Image (cartoon, rainbow, N blue to C red; front, side, top):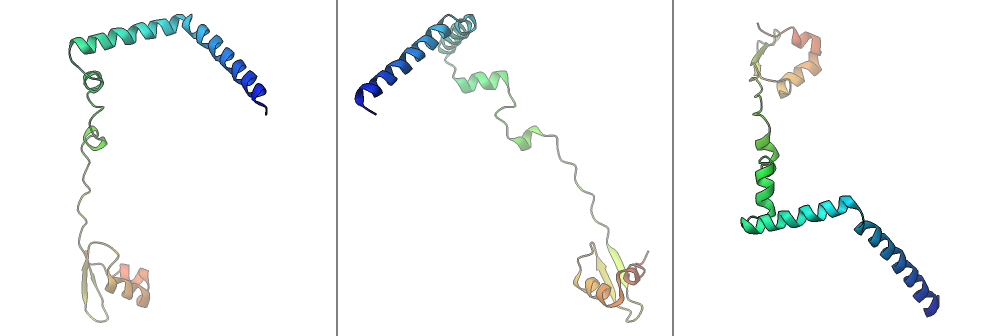
Length: 121
């Protein structure tokens, strides 16, 4: 692209942006927002407050972490100790879950249904 073509393209883009700027300047909503911003900045200067202070006043929970904003967690109830007795060997296994090494070995050897029936009440 020649320099002259670049210049003309930039000139057109500038004209379009200037037209957009003029239409925004005449927009009533924008005028209100600019007026509000100026008043807010003047008020912040008068009371020596920053943006963080304003946010803290308007939304006190904004600065808190997510954990402190939520209600306290409900704790799980403790697991019950289960006692299994192998009728073949008389061996006892006490566990709070099903991930016990000996219990897994029994389930593999005798089957899960049989081992579940060995649960002491």
